[in-house]
Length: 214
Length: 105
Image 1 (tube, rainbow over the protein chains, first blue to last red):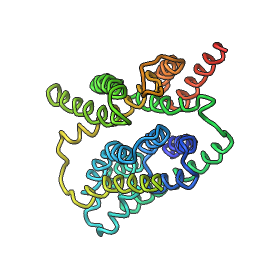
Image 2: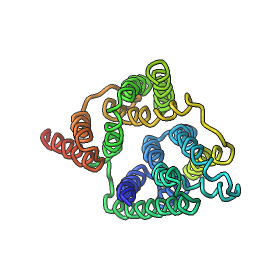
Image 3: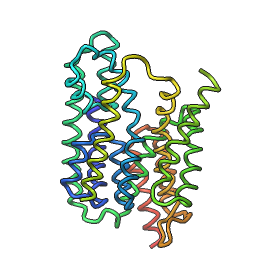
Image 4: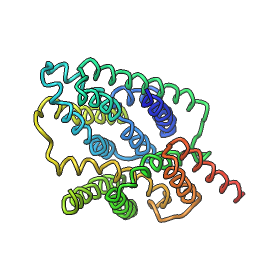
């Protein structure tokens, strides 16, 4: 329940920024329906606004959403008995939030396939509703950039990022990513800076945790 | 049309990340991979913050530039650190940005 409240503003903010980036209402909603992954949708909206190449947008989406493979992997043992088609359906709506709810139940021994489905579907519906709410809101603001509303993008990411920096290795990863992103943004074409920072700085984080503490 | 194809591409790769391990994997994920992917959000979010706050999109490509977006971002970061609330971060940052823009006029 609290996670619904957490996700709802994001869906609306996503929709406002996607419309601002020049996507049609149908495309804005289609992204929520088909991709259904908040962070990557925000990022894609920003990349569309910057006129990034389609390949860059798809690759960036892949990198950002690669963590889903971990969520699915950790759920896999609990749904081992299910039919492949059921698992394929379950995977479609898997997100950080619904995973968190479902796996908690599984770990307590009270989880079930039905509970995970319910958790997935409720997040999915909330996300679509808040996207539509944002589209209605976005229609009231004809040119978001004129009001400096494109700043909402980086501010959103600041809000997501800063609480994560309490952990020391994350702070190091962020500092490295900042340097790489800045150099990449100035020297590399298009949005490759994002992939460079996203892949290299996170790999550095993995290396630090291996060499340092367990 | 290109936009639609891009959207379908995004949907395809995203679904691939979700379904592959769900169907294929039975044991544990390698720990190096888990740690690597675990740091991806921090790295990506940082990159997405740095570029708009420190560069300006000129005719000849992006250049280093400091504008009202930077103090807005710093105030936003302070609010995010204290409250952990994304909406409060956005509101505070936009308030600073608008105030600075208004003062210049």
